Image 1 (cartoon, rainbow, N blue to C red):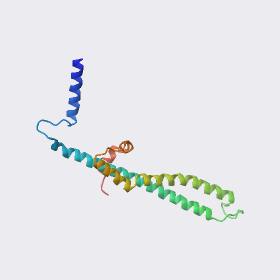
Image 2: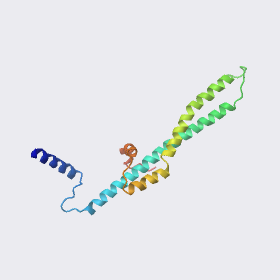
Image 3: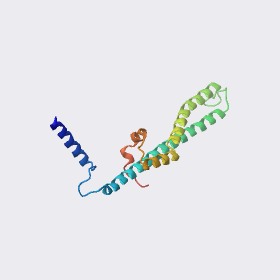
Image 4: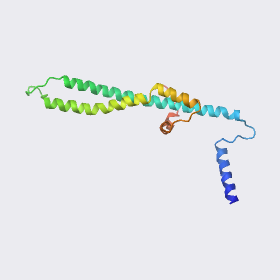
Length: 157
């Protein structure tokens, strides 16, 4: 039993030492402070990139669905012709189908875009960063979304 306990303690000490959590004899707690601050700065930057990326997606959905709303308005404003004088007669039934198809395509995208823009707003980003820098842990939903790509430096444009 003592051997198992000694083995567990030895493995725990080795893993903590590999993570630089146990200070060595010549290091102090103030020596570890820059490492912690660096990790916080990296996480803060990753949070900013995550929110920026999600807002960009929300703007894309909102603009795309805005074009769809414009197409709905255009289709609804077209006059109805019952004769076949044009290459595509635009009957009342066709008009309903076109408007319905455009509405079914556009409204979900509009909802997703608005939801992303509100969920990842600058106000919520700043509040989250303030709480994180004050020492509060990140919410699990945010931690799950923080992928390694957000920690890498982005190319300058």
